Image (cartoon, rainbow, N blue to C red; front, top):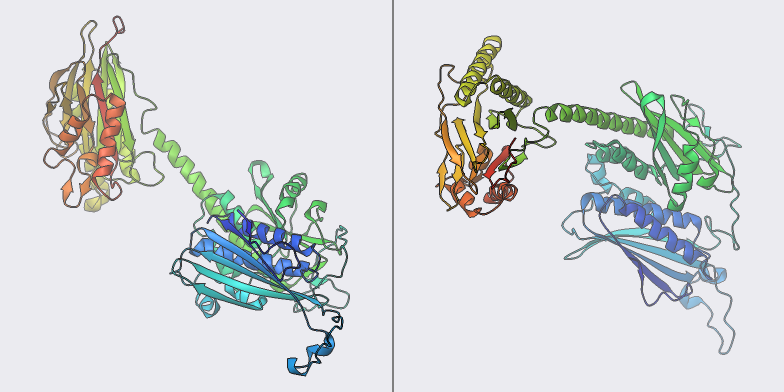
Length: 634
């Protein structure tokens, strides 16, 4: 929110102060530019402010954008921008070269002489709340350290500095201008006719010096660290829209007054991804104009001249625009279009800088697209490893909590399923494959589908575990035979059971067995908790292992809790959650909760037990018998 000090009542005041606050996000630099440009443009129209010229406004906007960008990148706190304008007059020409003591004294009652040319000083301060962070710039920039924006400030500002306070750090600069001196605008309103000047490239070897009759040079305002800063900001960006957003704000206003970035899409078409302009009011109209005529043929090197869009604005001599292809790995990723007011020549140096930026943007877009493509494929494959939904069991409420370990994964080493068998029988399982890599994920899908196949062929709980154990042992032996002793065996823990619901009989008959898995816990209505099965061998270790199941009745109001070791082995220092029957106490504390609420209660207890992040897949399956409406079992 912008606020003015009580002194800002008129442009003739010797000093005015305005300020605004900005959040530390990617829009902060744009907000600072808009604040400074609007403020200085309004002040320039007031009486006595002839020294505020368009060049002075552009320099102030450029430098405040640099400082705010640095504050966002390296401090990351809220930002305050303060703009102070100091008005004055130069002494008359005759007195300008005399010392003050030698100037004639004014006679009493005499009218004062005409004032000298108007002057103005623009002092801009950018403050953040990270006073311990050293401002980088100057000599440090040559060593490759981040944050080189102060080199540009040093080159353009009359003076600048850094002020450290207990809670804030302020970087400031001062620009000065005098009415009538080079860069000052003549009195009266300026006319800005639009034109369509064609950009000109200097011939090779010209060295950047304008030839007689040439247009002005396309100036590089990026500074020596511009390419390094571009690489740093684009590195690690895995969203192509974020890449184009950052690239546009890097290029404007350092290398261009506006820019547009198209990205190639299916069918060889171009989609306009980002448009940016120093005057943000022009962004919408400029986007509409450019969308009507997407690029179709952009030459390779040096840039291709582009017709100047009328809504982009222009200087009295028109405007220049060049298009550069975005090419990475031999493929066209899109097109970068840069525009700047005035009839300009682009030297070989500037062309090389723009082409270098274009290569970096193209590579970042290519990387982001590869990541998106691989992520899409991975997510599609992962979704096949788990059931789309859990089967509904009459008289039994079910709930699942599933949190795979690993960023960007929807499936890990844990897996679950609840599926119907017919004849009023349902099967449920909760398993955990050793490891968290893609091979572990592939075993989850194999085990789940094999259990379904064996169950539907009529195998009971003990038979399913025995046959799955044999399959896992055979696969481990084959892996060792093909990969040698370095090949890792795959072990599997599994809790598997059946529920039988009889018409007219409340609750369900449960048969369950645990193979190397944390035993399921049976919560009775009086708060008593008992293990529902005995611990047995992991699957895949010994192909001759025999498994035994336990059978009991799950009465209405009673709960069967099944978890993986991501819950029981959740650590807090040297302690695990299930030490001293810790999970039993957590389950007892949830007495009276419904299935979904109880599953969330267990999940929250696991997270709250330790101070660090969960380091394993976390799975909770709750089966809770409820009173069944008459006639609801088919």
